[in-house]
Image (cartoon, rainbow, N blue to C red; front, side):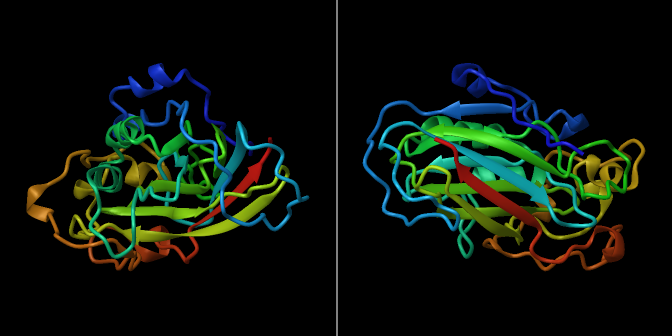
Length: 273
């Protein structure tokens, strides 16, 4: 199976996208965005494991980010990747989730995340895949990929990477990396493993009626049977982001079908230029 590449788009067009939700599997009209201007100071982080040495210049940089689903029973929304300055925290374990993270985790809604990118100058580049990522065996026979490759065009002030996607068959689960170093040398690469997290904003009922519609069809095939892309105030929690406990089997989700072992995803980032 080949990767589903994120499609390049003009930043102004990308940030004007509407209806970026999981409803009807419409999320994932791939886009990229790059911030212009700002500092071009050299990053402080070390080389990637496969670096060939040398900085290759302090101006424009291009990174290739590959995200792969390692689970056997959890589909992901198209992943979002951002290159940014170290001051940025899209999500942080032990802290309450911000609105963009909550909307992604509960509803597969990327619109608030797009807004965060537009408003945050310290986020220098971002990209989103164009299709959900399913387990490699594709148990629902969806034809969707299990990995995707994104490219980010940034400047030297972006020294860190954040990657995040929704764990679709959960109430409020995400998989991601929070502010990890980018490789600094041209041709350098870093490989990371990403775990699942519970963002602490919704009870884990594990009922299909409380999950986004594709939670069932992406693993078991067929058309979505019920579900919702809106938060339910009756299920609201006032918690913080924690490691995800996994599927407990308390509702409609069979742990043998929808469960996963950590890590949930592999992320490889390469500096191309």
